[in-house]
Length: 357
Image (cartoon, rainbow, N blue to C red; front, side, top):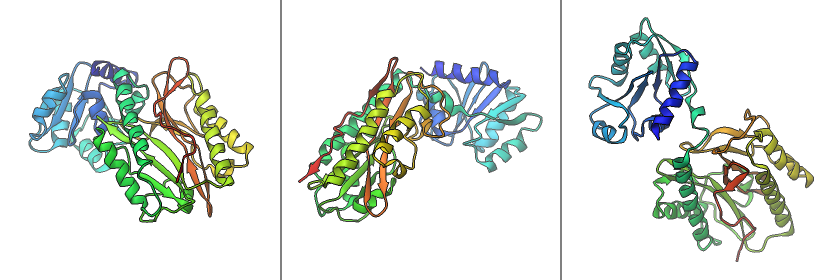
């Protein structure tokens, strides 16, 4: 598996006329080597792959990163990294400009006199198309999130706090096999529903509230992301109308997800449907994003998306919402796999309006 990833990285290196690349971002350490740890660097050249770590991780790295030569540092990670780059005879080395802290960059420059260390490379782009193993792990993370939704419906009731709902969701996911959550669980009820990323609070859930829950499971490093909104008690006519508008926008966008579609094109489908019911002005964020080892990855689906063409193997979210200050709001979200001829919804829990009596 990691052979293909290293080959892709080496092609990137050759395309940029570099003879080495330094990897420091934690998720990319794992993606290219298989090693899950921190305080580590990778140095990849045309014919060498080094993993530099300390005594805490040496045995683990030897087991998890068989394609790499494991080097133990004893006097400082950056110093050892610079030493190995010089020993490899590198003349021009790329680094992750979106991940390497300035102080660390400055220290490396100081120790790499005579080596061109001024080429920032964006390695995250190599993770956009997921392989079969990655899809399997995201699928499992989505299954765990679906279990949590089914069980939380029996837990939510008037008089409990948003924090209690968030804690219960997280507990269910851990029991179902998640190593942790994908991100801080969002639970926003009543008027707080107008805040798209309203963190759970001690607010009591009341009859008549919409309760929006945005949560995800992380399974063997890979994330899921789902949002469901339920009503406590019988929904009002306006709640029903707005819910159906959001749901139809979400499903309209889902219906056009396919290879070759652009991020702007799919985002526009959802916005047009919301506009038909006068709700587009209450939808301020993008329609979706990719996910994998990180909860927010490229490509994005939005008015400003740079994605010209979705490809099979990409995983995205589809998450329109309506947020009305002084009234509340809701969002409906699925994690979606782009397939050869269309898409597959990986989060499969019910999206129809549920009224909890």
